[in-house]
Image (cartoon, rainbow, N blue to C red; front, side, top):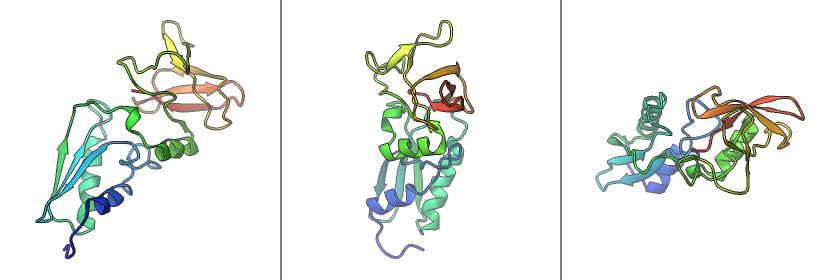
Length: 179
């Protein structure tokens, strides 16, 4: 049972240790899923989460992991609030989280998501490698750092990733799509 008053900062620190179930090297905080934390005087803790996309199959697992982590630290009254608007964007990912993705072999988003297409106009965009694919981001290989890469499939190991291959080191890799 929690005896001392818990701060919002402490809750954020605990949540930063909760791994994403699909990419365990990155936390739900680094991913930007945790949007807000409130701790009431009586000790009730409300955590606002936003799914990475509508229908994300991992959201219940994430919600359970968040609640379990806080309860493990003695917080008995944990409330989760799912917020759908504004919609999650890869812009909410931390720089530390992007570096962790790269170290894990997943190329992080290559640009900011500032429009519905998920592509930023101008720098960092090239024509699609697949017919009809439209402009594609310039994606650096997480293995060798080369930007001489090619999209092989819009769908990778999870719906939020695309499959690329490096034309220099020849390694295939997932790219965390910008959205």
